[in-house]
Image (tube, rainbow, N blue to C red; front, side, top):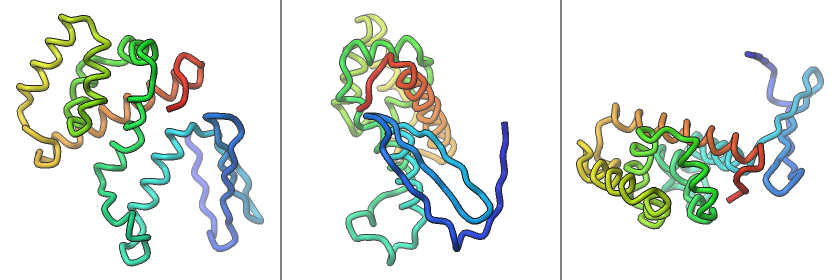
Amino acid sequence: MTLKIMSDTIDIEPKLSETAENEFLLEIESDNIQFSFQLSKLQIQTLGLKCIQSIPEPDINPRFNNIGEEDVYRIPLQGLVHLEDREIQTILREGDMSELEIFLWYMQSNEELINRFLNNMSKRAGDMMRDGLKSFPDAHPDTAPIRRLKQAREATEKLMKVISRLQSCGEIGPF
């Protein structure tokens, strides 16, 4: 379903409230529209980072000045390291392994996260994934061509959708 709403934003004041441990309600109201979104913590973090990124630099608090476009995709998933092994194994079962390989390459600056995923695979699968990560055509995501970064962002977004779906049905908890 696609819904497109155009409105003068002068009289809109968004409200965000936590409805449960990992659930938030984003409400947007004005004189002529009213709607709300039920969002997870992961979705709120991603939305917040995208908003911060679009604010002109002089208007941003100095501690946020170093948030780059890639951080919008990476930061919300840093918390995956806090999941239990069983939850990571659920993500591994539900996710696409080729997408996961791209995601792990993209997140390579977070060794703890990579090890959590690799250690929850079978020895053979983990060894194959390690070899795949070592033989990746581009050594580091921060110096990779834009086409590779686009693939990594898409893989990350797909993984975020899998995680959101698993959280919504209670198979994994918030992180």
